[in-house]
Length: 88
Image (cartoon, rainbow, N blue to C red; front, side, top):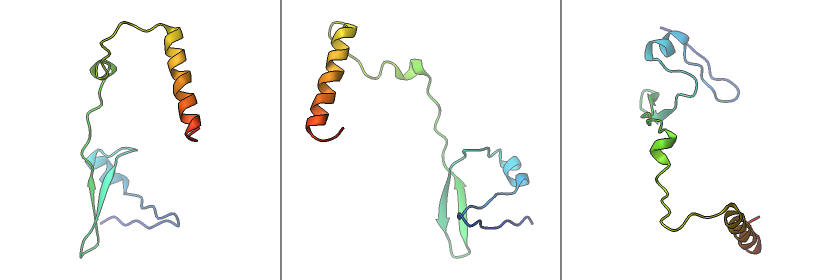
């Protein structure tokens, strides 16, 4: 049985043999549950990474195409609106 230690930052290192056996790499997210016996770690469900092509059409615009000048003016108006509200 492998052992580990809690660091001063509250971190626990999982032994390499366990990480390798479960294919848990850097960045793996876990849910943490307190149980009567201790703590239960479960890897969070992995979300499938989407490609740009899969998400590009989510924000549809049905009007005529905007020019770069019109886009710049729209961004400028929005910044002015947010600054007036004290957001930026």
